[in-house]
Image 1: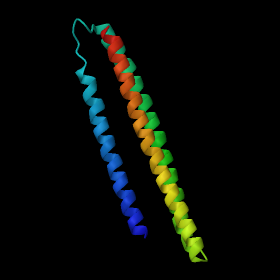
Image 2: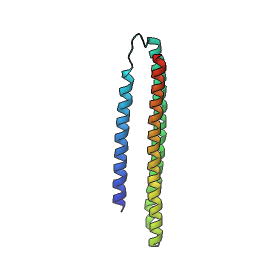
Image 3: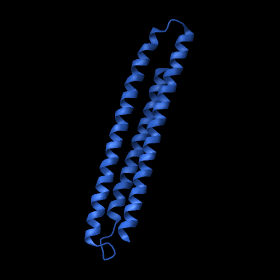
Image 4: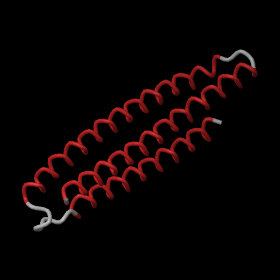
Length: 135
């Protein structure tokens, strides 16, 4: 039973990491795409760079907080998994297992939603900065 949960969590973690890598590649790919020409003079470009650096910095701070929360949830779930052996009856074991399963997937859902929300916020900010800077 734990093997299946472990494999599911491993697959979910791998998918999350892959998504983060793809998002990061997209973010990095977006920045060099801003042309430095007459329509985008040097001062505006430097202002854009400064604001974009602030956005990226804030995004990484939020990602760190999310990872720390995910780690905390994981540790709590590991403690609860070890506590499953203390169940006295099959019904108690079933209830504790179900609670652990729900909490695990709730944590995964929260992390996924946070990542999607962060990506949307960064993309919106990038779009806002590029449209303001090019005007």
